Image (cartoon, rainbow over all chains, first blue to last red):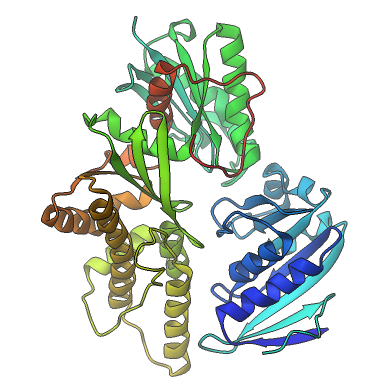
Length: 146
Length: 336
């Protein structure tokens, strides 16, 4: 387990980029954090690290956004609006977890039966103002300093 | 010969089909959420699901044809949204459109969802002096574009994170309001007033036409959390006013900037947030000062509907733009 204190949006993006650069195989990144704690910003960084050229925007309305990275696809999912597993299947989300690529999952506990690939768990705690504590299980980077 | 186009839209939550004659005459417009699904089809209908589209699509298309007082054989082309949206949802509309296109031997025209929102304006307004600015603000999109002509729409700015409507909805969620929260924030805001409470919106450089609302969202959340910690009550009407003012000001500022920089004197609106009266009022008032005229479709054509797809398809068809049976769905993509 690794714990990081992030004091700005830029630091959140930086850490995401380091994670993105380090990924070489399909993985599911499960993000747990309240609204406004930086889940989309972290994903922006991750996308940078994966070599995605498009702008990463919130998937809350669209539920699933798909991007092409340098070597791997990035699937960005916000399952907040899904009520049950049937809706997730209907929305085509089950297939994503069998696909080659990096899945970033927000509000997705109900989707865990689909998980086949390795999971990295990220918990974000709001420390007030713009500070966040990020606890990551399954990955760390000792070079990250702030 | 009259052009009679079936427009199909299934990119997000709505299943919609409409019949549009010659690009402007709306013969019918069927939107799934506007009809009593339970009465017509029975059972529980999930809110977000491709299966809902699948269950609805044939009935919605049949109803659109019936309400228009025509038969399938009267159709001259079919327009269908193929991007951006949820792939599974888009494919339902595309597959139905392909089937009809083959069986009736008429053109199949793919339409970008945002192009549809822009063309909803041509149903009511005579607009032929290009270029025209286009502002699309909804729960899923926030884009500013230059509508050069029927073949070219250039997006000059878009949101870098949350859409404007999404910012309204998420802040409403934090305030404990129901979904969708945008209209409720507007309602509370009309009873609120300007106080010292101001929520800044990110500045993205003076010549950028992009938008960013996630910082605003965080600021409001921080404010509410702080007030909670201090056991102070918030005045929801005043918070709603400040939130609406911040979002609307950011949007209006970019439209005016584009109008001045590009020398464009007309702007068309589209998307659900366009129904926000404060946005329309601010745009009209501030537009007037620089000679910018504002056009908006009437309410029902602001949100997702088949009419706008039928209208856009009419103009694309005139230029011979059409798809084939390999037509696919895309979750994202530039306006084509």
